[in-house]
Length: 202
Image (cartoon, rainbow, N blue to C red; front, side, top):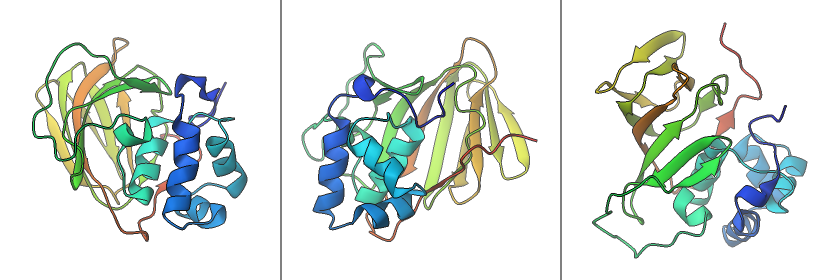
């Protein structure tokens, strides 16, 4: 079974060269960027050469480090400061089973996404990074662990928390869950992301 950050990169065409170009454009060495992302230089090199597919949480982390958005990492370049994002079908991108679609304008200090969380995907992945997150459950049931506390959320429930609190997100039902997700984008080159390698629920 692949780990959350492994897999063939063909599902995300064009991401690998953009990761490399963004790192170089920020004046970061492979070693420095990898350290900030909680990765080995060899692993980041595999992401940049397309030999590994990054998961959605990893894309979020790399976007924070490089001061950009997941949409821009994927080559989606809407007009700067776009105020209106039209609805429609869920035609988003996929990363390690998670489906997501841009739900906010670009060039902002936070990013809004519409996310589909499938059952059994990334539920054991612990995320820790600077910033804040807000999510609102639209469909299905969601389990979110904040530190040692576990909360089960129903449609209409929301959560707003400091992202430095170790957190895990998982869908409770086999039908998955759909949510609105907003997180802050940190422009500072000192921003760091630490992803647990395989932190499992106790």
